[in-house]
Length: 155
Ligand code: 5GP
Image (tube, rainbow, N blue to C red; front, side, top):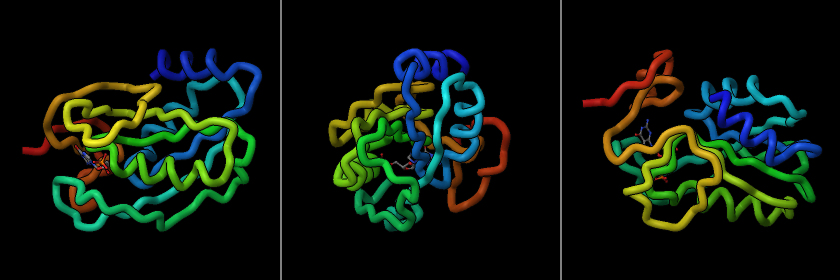
């Protein structure tokens, strides 16, 4: 976590990026990340609802909570728990781009690179995994297991 925060801080030195977390899964990660950062940041959240609660993403996304901090002309770092097919993030980036930020980069806790269906550049990434459904550390399955302090593969 420290290395990830250090890398972001060195890239954004002299600026005040806005960390935008994608609720709900991101809460543990963004809290740990933000605490390790040594430059000033602001923080806001969006919530993206994908239809269905199964173990795969349906690919249909809508934003049920928008950002409240103005982001026009500001550097934005979109912080996501897991990038899987990439569809959720691609939708969110598109919506945020319309608000005219200076830049948008993506920071993901886990990147499931092998399952990508759409190109989304993950600029900062905690871990890369190939397969498996992850729970714990903020990540749920049907709202269960989110509270677990560690990460588990659901079988
Ligand atoms: P994508 O649109 O990239 O396919 O899906 C991203 C979202 O699907 C993530 O933000 C997360 O909510 C959910 N997701 C994808 N893979 C996993 C996983 O292994 N575990 C959990 N808990 N959620 C996942």
